[in-house]
Image 1: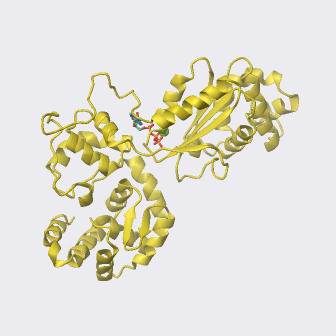
Image 2: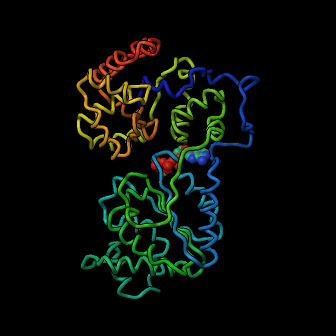
Image 3: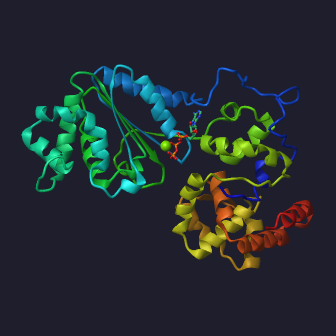
Length: 390
Ligand SMILES: Nc1ncnc2c1ncn2[C@@H]1O[C@H](COP(=O)(O)OP(=O)(O)OP(=O)(O)O)[C@@H](O)[C@H]1O
Ligand SMILES: [Mg+2]
C-alpha cells in the first residue's frame, strides 16, 4: 500500500471527516439503514448483473447456451459475482477454472483444471478428438496436439457432460489463462448453440485476454453506489464512507482496504493522503509503464494538481519544462481523458497510484510549480499545496 498526499477535489469544501469510532446519529444521516443482517459474504447491489447472470443460467437450464463475460478493474467484484453465480447454479453441474499468472506459460493448464470432472466422458466423443485431448492434457503420450482437434474435443466434451444435467462453466481471471487453453475454450464457446450450457468469464479490463476481438456479450462492472459503499464499510461514519467512495470510485476492494485507516482520514485536512491497494495500483502503473518519460512527468503533474484546469497545469508545466501535449499518449493508454481545457483521470485510484509511484523529488517539484502557477486569488490553495510538499 502506498501513501499519497493529494486529492483535494475529492472532499467538498464544506466537507469534514469524522473518526471511524463515531456512530451514525443525528446530523450524520445514512440513507441506507445499517442492518444486522448484512455480513461481508453478502453481495451488495449489482442488480443488473445478477439479473443477467440469472438469465444466462435460466437459458442453460432450458437448453439454450448463454455466454457472459464480466469485465472490470482489479477489486471491482468479478470473483464475488462468480461466487454469487455458483450459488445460483443449483441443480447444474459446475465446471470451474481460474487463470493463474505463474502458470500462464504451461500449455493447457487451465483447460485441464476446467474439464477434469468431464474426463470420464471421453469415451463418448469421437475417438480422434479424445486422443487429441488426452495427448494435449498429457494424459497419454502423443505426437503433440492439433489445435482444431483439441478445440473440437473441448466442445464435444462439454456437450457430453451436459447430457445428464445443465452445465455452468465459470472461468475467473481469464486474462491469465495459458494461450492454448484460451484458444481451445474460445473455439468451443463460440460454437455452443442448443446446449444446456452457461459460460461465465471474468476478466480484468485492459489486460489482453481470449475475449479480445471475440465479440462475446460483456458486462462492464462499475463501482458500488455511495449507499452500497456505506453498507460495505459498515461502522464508518457516513461522511468518512462518502469520502472513501469518492476516492475509490466505489471499488469494493479499495473501500475495504482503506476503511481501517478512517481515523487518519478523519484527522487529515482537505487533500488528505489516499492509500492504494497494491493490486489496483499495479494495474494502473502497468499502463503508465509503457509511456515515455515526458508523458509520465506530465501525468505526475496532473496527479499532483487538485484542479483539472489545463491552463493552470500549463503554467506549472512551463515552470518545469514539461510538455502537456504528451498527455495524449496517457489518454490512449486509458489513464486520463482530455477535453477542451481539462484533463481528468479515468479513475481516482489511477491518479493516486501515479502520484504515489513518482519519485519524491518529482512530486516536490510538481507541488512547487503548481503553487507558483496558481492565480493570486487562490492563495489558500497555494499555501496548502506548499504545506503538503513531500
Ligand atoms: N458487490 C459486492 N458486495 C460486497 N462485497 C463485495 C462486492 N463486490 C466485491 N466485494 C468484495 O470486494 C473484494 C474484492 O472483490 P473481488 O475479489 O470479487 O474483485 P475482483 O474484481 O475479482 O478483483 P481481481 O481482478 O483482483 O480478481 C472482496 O473482498 C469481495 O468480497
Ligand atoms: Mg477476482
